Image 1 (cartoon, rainbow, N blue to C red):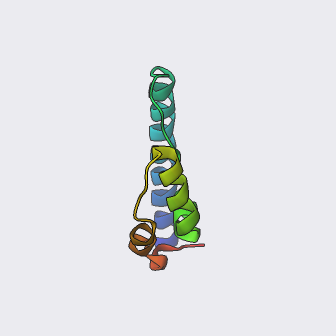
Image 2 (cartoon, rainbow, N blue to C red):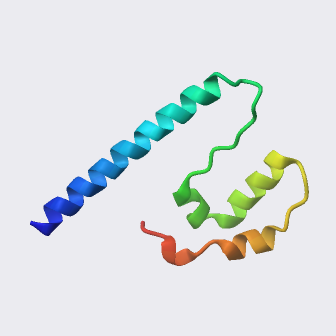
Length: 79
C-alpha cells in the first residue's frame, strides 16, 4: 500500500513540475528580450564540468569552474 501512495505522490509532484514548466515557458515567450539558459538536473549531476562551461559561455565571463564542479554533490545522482 505504501508503494502506491509513494507512486501517487511522485505522479502529483511530476504533474506540478510540468505545470510550472508550462507557466515559465509561457512567461518567457511573452518576454523575448530576456536571455536564459535551460539546465537539466540530471545533466548538471552527470556532467558538472560541461554544465559549468555552458554557464560560463552563456554569461560570457570567466567563472570559477572548479568550485562550481565541486559544489555538485554526486550522491544526488538518481539514475
